[in-house]
Length: 288
Image (cartoon, rainbow, N blue to C red; front, top):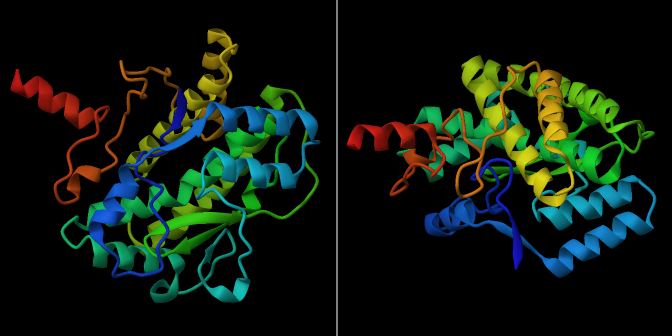
């Protein structure tokens, strides 16, 4: 039996490619393919957490173990493709502008809405997943506001964190601390992207909310002893930490969250709505 991690956004993590003329079919296959952990890998991760102190080295190894694109990477400031709260490059050379242009080149028929909101989803998936790993696996919080992510090709994958002192406390205290740090980071990302390409705040908030609930749903798979009351309380705390409207964690028959937003993947050639897409529900209702 394998444990499947679809990721925070089903299609947000694409196969890394520096070749912007790569085969489209390959990119779409990577977009849909889940990342799996065998029981042996899960056991190895558990043993690692039990045998080592909470530190950045553990975070780096664990994040890459959980997702191969969630990898600690050395990002030279001179490289020009790092994205952080300190990014000040003008529009034509801003790393998000370059990702947008690459998406536009590879998926010319997807449309502006897809290119813009794909940049948003790609920008936020790593800080969210790292935040959940810190709280529920490392039992510590990190200075997430200072996270640097790597923009490469048509994706944003790879990160760098300053090795500052870890924050410790109860699970509730950790959620409060790291969600505040992560919210500051993501709010800055929103401002930068919105300056380049106007975004609709409410739609971005719904996409963010869906990513948070997806992360919470995956957490419950790894922590089966987590009580329902704790799940509800933690979900509310995460959403409040990001200044989002509270909502329940509801799952479909296939174990996916009931989304409040469409990730827009249907705008790709020969793509369809995701099984848990709210637009799919409307389409099925109209067909009856």
